[in-house]
Image 1 (cartoon, rainbow, N blue to C red):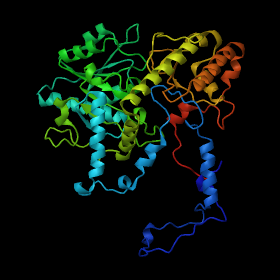
Image 2 (tube, helix red, strand yellow; image 1 turned 180 degrees about the horizontal axis):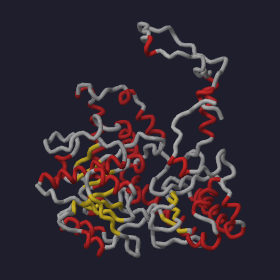
Image 3 (cartoon, helix red, strand yellow; image 1 turned 30 degrees about the horizontal axis):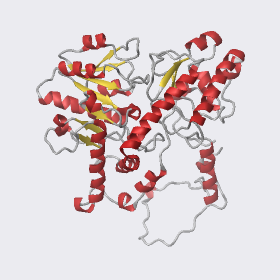
Image 4 (cartoon, rainbow, N blue to C red; image 1 turned 60 degrees about the vertical axis):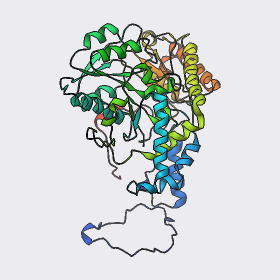
Length: 464
């Protein structure tokens, strides 16, 4: 289809009222020389153009979206309505404080709720996204140790089941990273953790449940070991959807937590944002938070109060569901994942086949060995059945991995349909593997060279 720059509609133009502001002309040095090829799009053409683009895009409004470790779920539209209120959209962060009491009230109320949910004592909404929250949390950790004159603590311990951004964030914050392997049960290897701890340990970054969808059975022992070594425990809240209202990071022994409002609390996810990655901490770290007013604060990590309207949406979600609703959301997410894992486990290999949390990982290593059909082939074939592929080849500790997260907002009927398709694809892999290797066949583009696209991106449009 055409790009917007290629339109030359004869009916292009708009009817607007006469301008009420003084006319201004650009200096000649800033004027373009040739406007003949400037695009012209009528209102009807513009509407059709973006509708056509939308028809080529897959979203939750079109089908099942089981992207693991991402919580791509339905977000209630009432949150969008509330965030569109003029009292929220027409303010400026430099207004006098007495004129934005309602907005300050939103931040304070949401902070109170998130403290209750996580077991933390204070929250900053400054971070703009999850990885930004990780970085902020690590800067708190660094500031804490340096305030005590403990400059030797330069190492962050990260399990191999952690999110990929964890070691990157630690490195950006100036720490060295010690990667420790998981045990045979998919959880932290206690002996390896013990060997990694020492006087240079600044802290541990842990996702619980981890990226295998497993809750760390020894979580209290793990955080105690870190504390006994003089380190702090950091909780990556990307998977909080599984324990929301059921278990609190603070009660698990964590000192710092980042949340993803765009994963857990019903705000949009993907599409370039905006996101929000608030950071919570225990009381002894509060003075290091951005905007704390203390001389020990790590300072600004983003302008003003962060992405405020995202916080509005999250607050609506929390207040709408309440304590019992948040608790039920977690239970339903866990139920859906276990149901799907049980159905697929009849054919697909589930390497850690015990009760999962909100997501689980299947390995297609045996299927590939027997049929030549890879995890990528199965994922691409799902597209032809109207579903988005799950996360592929992650976590790295599982060969030919597919990670599924059905979330709490999908019905049993939808999950059954997805399972029926996947079980059928498993049979097709044995009967007609070449068919799956040619998928998808129903999309405008088949299988682009993703490695080439990443290494040699074309970042501008040249007509003709």
